[in-house]
Amino acid sequence: MGDNDSRRLPRVAVQQIVVVFDAMLDQELGRIVNLNQEGFMLIGDSVKENCLYQLNFFLSEPIGDVSTLSIGAECLWVRETVGDDRNWAGFHILDIADADLKVIDELISQIDDN
Image 1 (spheres, rainbow, N blue to C red):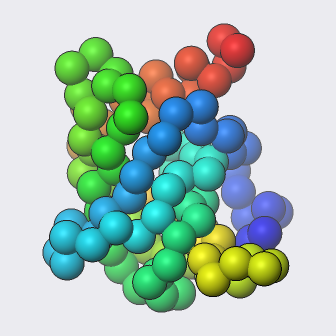
Image 2 (image 1 turned 60 degrees about the horizontal axis):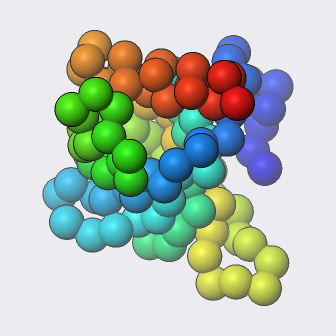
């Protein structure tokens, strides 16, 4: 899935449900499969390769008092799944507030503790 050689940081599997919405269309795009501070992969539909997105991440379990993140990202690739009408999609994070980046760091540290 995607070009692992171009990643500087390994991605880790997410231990909670993170639903991703296109903020401009208020439309669900999918769910996060794995992420790091620079990018993420989701499984979903309606995602287009080489497009910029303004996204909202909705966490199933808040981190501190934060349950929503706002992220600007570019979809770098889309791959079909087998036996399903959803797709895998790889994103590079382009714009994220420092506070939201700290929430991603906390999500990753929760995973490392397991």
